[in-house]
Image (cartoon, rainbow, N blue to C red; front, side):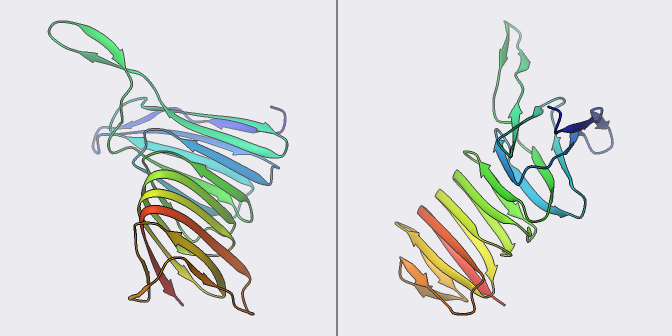
Length: 214
């Protein structure tokens, strides 16, 4: 795509750490970034002062994942997917794809983007990303740290933690619990404040929500 300038880095293997790294960088003018993850233990979202998206996957397995992108209608779509790998046995050899344990991704993003994360079983960590976040996963741990802009989380099973200031809440969990500053709160929990400049919405099933306030 002409709107994406790609710098592809060679796979780096560190014998001392037993880790393999795949890294790519993309320059984009899109306002929205959609990230689909497959077979990762964790994805971390980090602020960048540059207008460049940098994606890095670290795994114990060599060439475990592929990072691909396409840009359409002002949306940069990134996919991090596991590669098939070869398993040997004394009787037969076959190609299979399975969850790569100890595989994680760090995504550095320009500030003020609309970020959407889609996955099944993955932990999502935001290092207080300064843009809006929408997270849709089946199972995992979600830690937003400090909420800077609007956030939307849909989670079937797991735990959610965040730190809020001047924030409206629309939170519901069917079978989990909501705890705010150590105190249990009934679900659904809805709070509107005059000084609010952002909203966090959570729709969960078997998930606990832990709220801290500055």
